Image 1 (tube, one colour):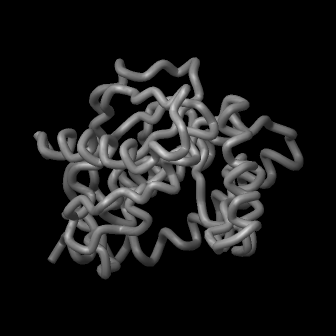
Image 2 (spheres, rainbow, N blue to C red; image 1 turned 60 degrees about the horizontal axis):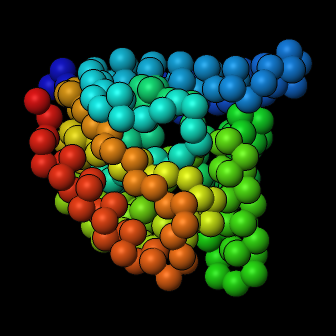
Length: 240
């Protein structure tokens, strides 16, 4: 009963808090002229508050595999809506989201995402999609690390789905390493189709970077399979 009450409180309080943090990000960027990197401290605080209010403890392992001096693409599983709060608050590296452009049209929230440096992607087919991916690859090559979910959507049962090759094409084009990661435990916190978060523990487990420099676009399917298997191995360790 206490867990459900906590989940209901989280559900009620977090939308207005999200708008408050979005407003704070805009003020920091527009009024105080803070850099994107410094503005990122605000959504990080938002994510940490979310996990704290929901009663979720987060642990990170494998950070020693990744150099903070190199841009990269972090690719992992997508078990739950709670993945966003977990990664935003506790991921140990500076990153930006590679997100569908529809999110950038949400009043207040969308402009805050733009000012924080997150990258919109047009998921429609055709020339617009190619153009947006080329722009994203340029940003990544220029030094911006991003997080992607190659499954394309949340898993309904927490099990790892096939990785789409489009994200792999982006990594090959940007010529940056892909770092596999596993989110363990978020499905139990907030399964797809539910609104109430449950207290618990989440582990973010990072693997060894996979180099893409010199790879051809036709190798994207092979790369997707390799990344899938790397994430599956990380998931197998579960939540200690």
